Image 1 (cartoon, rainbow, N blue to C red):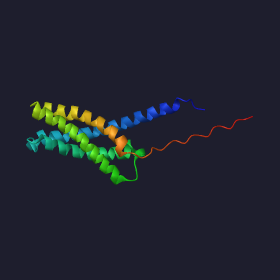
Image 2 (cartoon, rainbow, N blue to C red):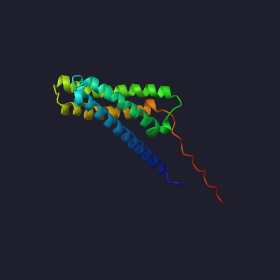
Image 3 (tube, rainbow, N blue to C red):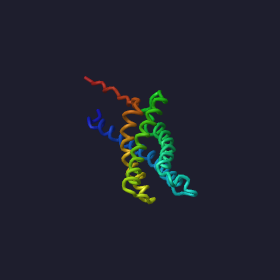
Length: 163
């Protein structure tokens, strides 16, 4: 018979694995977000250099697509539901909330504090905003988006007692 502490340890190990996957997907989405934001803001032609909030919305939208694919098919693959449309809608709503956190940090830094350098914009939007938005997203994904039941391991029946 397995010790009683093995179930909590297994749950902890499963959560750590899930957080590692979530972090990996998030890191990839972060690179997409950061790269595209900087390309649009400071790259050749500074396409959206005069519109930092628009640049952030575009970069977050593309990163959200990357994140959706990674989280649905890898991080939370065991918690997917059959209602893909509901999941996608909830995912988008959660990511709009996460984006508003990042955009809010950028807006506060740019328009309230007057910090307009590339470093200030990156710290406010891509460090502070993303960190706060990431915590919000993880909790919301688990509770609102990927709500299917994870597959439960089957336990071996108790061995028969020999009398």
